[in-house]
Structures are given as structure tokens and as C-alpha cells.
Length: 228
Length: 247
Image (tube, rainbow over all chains, first blue to last red; front, side, top):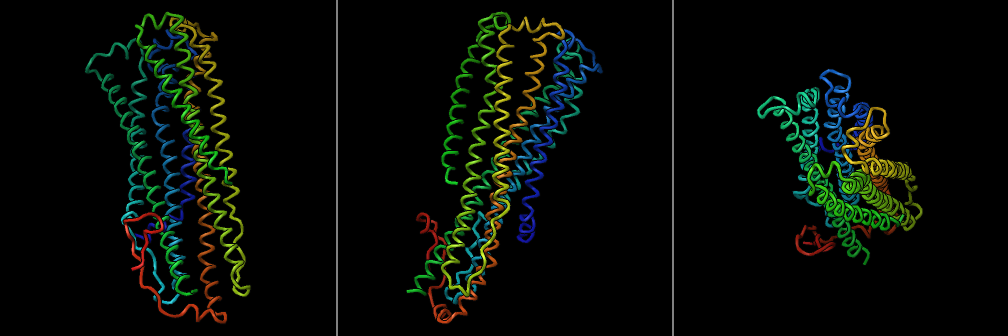
């Protein structure tokens, strides 16, 4: 498990570039969405709201609505991957500090060789927390993508003749409720994911500090004992 | 390099100003919605109130993003300071060892200048997003000075409809562009960490070789030999450097 984690951690730059790529994709997609929204809003209110399903105006509106449903999730996933890259880099710093300390102390007299600091619970918790955070963001993105057919299908109706007169219990109102409800869940997952990733960064920093403190004390003991 | 504290304070100040403006806008929004729909849609006074609310809604998030960008820039600056400090420390230690045991110093990591370039691009993106949002916000202010009934009756091709399309369309991409700016800044932070990793890796390779050479020097082998204390253990009580204790 530790070997797998170590081999994954060295790829932190690729994870960061992937995150930037996703944020860029989200930005480019919103440009298309903005164009569709501008096309829709260029028509007057009566024309917009009475346009029939399948017309170019309704198509443009459905496209704009579906793009605004999934792009924030992708942008957050991109930011999440960048935070994961930070966690991985901190993990790598921690490993480097431990290993270099062990290599140097291996050259000291055996009674002065303190080895490496004992692994605390935090060392296991920080990759796990980062993984759960990333999974939450991935789940939010998959859920947002799964909404696209519903959003497109809902907005592919005339506002005046089909959406506004929809009766309670109708398919359209069910769809609207599902879309709005899901968007709240997705927002919750996004912030949960980011929160867990920030917690993971904090834990990784605690580990780095703990290792530095260990090495500081070991070095002081060595100097006091040997160079008196 | 030591300016990170000013970057951090600027970021926090911008966030505090954003929060204060947000609270003020929330009060304006609640007083706007206290009126009935007919009044909201027809009254020029309420339209003036709405224009302020709508325009603030457009630019305020980007001001907060700029605050976050300053804080991330401070984070990147701290990492650069740590990276450079590690290099300086390596140079100082190497200067202290006998000439025969010395090794060349690590070159300056390439990720450090890249970090500053990325941080600059990220700041540029978030600042450009704020400027664009201020421009769109001013359009929204003049647009929503018109009561809703006038906006609803706007004919195709009219200035009002064109402005409405511009305002609503820009709101979509502006948010994503601020996110992109933050993503570039986070990539700068990753590059700052990469600089630290580079220096640590170099030191991990060089330090054992320095120790090996040192122990080969006359008098050093004796200094390294003999007994000493046994082990360090982690103590959860105490603070800072008192946490690791000798058993």
C-alpha cells in the first residue's frame, strides 16, 4: 500500500496539469453556453417564451441551461485535483525528509541513530481524507453530467404553453423538482470534497512539522553528545 | 520574497470588504423583495434599487476571488521563501564543512521562476475577470434602471435586449474565468512545492556523501564513535520542539 502511494505521489505534477485542463475545459464550455444564452435573450420576451419545442430559440436555451448545470462541477473537480496535487507534493516532502534523515543517521553511531519518526495515525488519515474528498468531487461531477438529459429535456419545451401551465404531479414538474434538488446535493458534495481536501493538506503539513521537529531534536542530541 | 505578509493582509482586507458589501447588498435585496411584484415591476424607485443589487451581484464574487487570489499568492510566496531558505541553508552548511568534503550546491530549481510566472498569470486572470465584471456590472446598472415592464416590452434588436443578453451571457463565463485564475494560482503553489522537493532530493543524495567524506577525515571518525542516548519518543503534551523527547 505504501509503495503504491509513493509511486502515485511522484506524479503530482500530472495531476495538477489535469486539474488545470479541467478548469480550462469548464471555461471554454461556458463561452459556448454564453453564446447560446445571448442568442436566446436577443429575442423579445414574447417570442422567447412562446417559442415551440425544437425551435432554434428553445434549443439555444436548453443548451445554455445544460452547460450551466455541469460546468461548475467540472471547475470544482479541476480545483480539487490541484489540491490533491498539493497533498501529494506534501506527502513527497514528508517522505523525502524521513528518508534523508534515516540515510544520514545510518552513518551515525548506532546508539545515536534514532531512525525515522514513528508513523502516526495522521500518516494514514491524510491520503484517505484526500481520496474521500476527490471521490466526493468526482461523484458531484458524474451526477452533474447525469443531469444533462433531464435539463435538456425539461427546457426543450415552450415556456408559456408547456412549462408554466404544468400541473402538480406532471412529468415536467417532477423533472424540475429533481433538477433543482440534485443541484443542491451537487453543491453540497462539492464543498464537502473541497473541505476534506483542505483538511488533508493540514494533516500533511502536521506530518512535515512533526518530522522536522524529530530531526531537530535528533541533531541537537547528536551535537550535544559528540561535540562537547 | 518577504512580502507575503502584505499579500496575505491585502487578500484578507479584500475578503473583509467583499463580506461587508455582501451584507449591505443582502439588506438591499430584502427591502426590494418586501414590495409586491406589481410595485417591483413598475416602480422607477425600486428599479433603481434593483439596478444596484443586480450590478453588485455581478462584480462582488470577482472581488472575493481577487482576495482569494492574493491569499494563494501569499501561499506561493511563502513556499518560494522556504525553497530559497533551504538552498541558502545548504550553502551555509556546505561552507562550514572542510573543503575536501564539499560538494557542489544544487542549481536553482526551474520550477521557482515558473511558479512566479504562473502566479502572475493567475493574478492577471482574476484581475481581468474583476475588471470585466465591473464593466458588465455598469451595463447591468444602466439596464436595470428600467422597470421590468419596460424590459419585457423591449423589441428585438433594441439596446435593452442587447444589453440584457450581454449581461446574462457574461455572468456565465466570468465565474469560470475566475475559477481558471484560481486554478493557475494553485498550479503556482504546486510549482513552489516542486522547488522544495527538488532541493530536498538533492540534499538527500549529497548529505550522506558529505558525512561519508567527513568521517574519512582525520579526527572525525573518533568524534562519530561511542555511545549515546537510545531513542526519541513522541509526547503529545507540551508544545513545539518539546514534542519529541529522549527516552
